[in-house]
Image 1: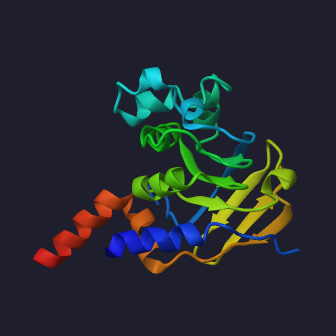
Image 2: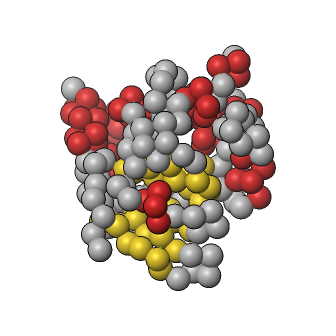
Length: 199
């Protein structure tokens, strides 16, 4: 019940407004941007024919294949990226492999105008930061960098020269939700909690 409550709170916090750690700490990530459009469904993120695989790296090699066949290579060359999307990102089926594929391709976070509800929850499940920011797709261009700071409640956009273009205010995530992200997802989080309980 506690976890369900966390998810309800998480969904309520993703609608944000502009104000004038897996590998690294999940609460704060910065990376180059790869931009996609509106209504990107899970079959675009990872086509159904690849759902026979479970390995993140294998799934990652086919991430966004229908619209950007070289996405995996671009992301890896940049050392990982933040995907910036339009409205309703992650619509369609509830397949968790879509999030696994994004992580396998080196995606550090997803920032979108809005998310499909189930996809957002799957991001939390899998330890992938996802933040909805109204107006983000109008500001960001390919080549920019985005910094997501969930602890401070900020999303910052920088141009290719490192100059700040725009700062958005976003709700700070609840500590329990941050802990899930920093644990790498819900399962590692629960394992850690169970381990602490036993000791």
